[in-house]
Image (tube, rainbow, N blue to C red; front, side, top):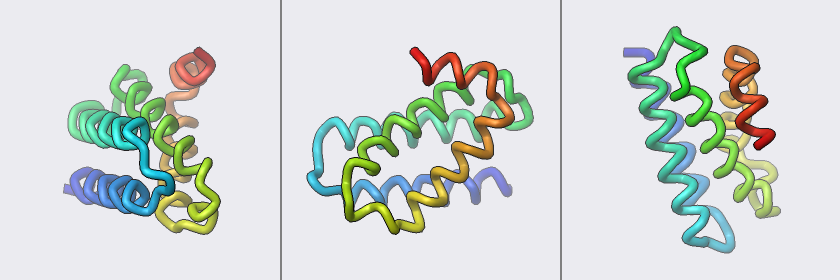
Length: 105
């Protein structure tokens, strides 16, 4: 049940950031959709398995979406952005060897 709560919170944060993003672009919308899908897959199917490739996909796609958010000055004080960055940082530590390689490529 707690994973569902976390998943819902992440999806809400992604959706909220996407709605506030200026300028809105199809690339940002695609990145948000990928991040939402990949995070949900990781939380629902790979919890407790940090070496599962779904975590690498989730964190990499979430990082790609957050890059769009970072480009918008309006987002710099966003609580949702801060929470998502924290999620990436926390989980990147767990799956560090796999994620570092994915983010570098």
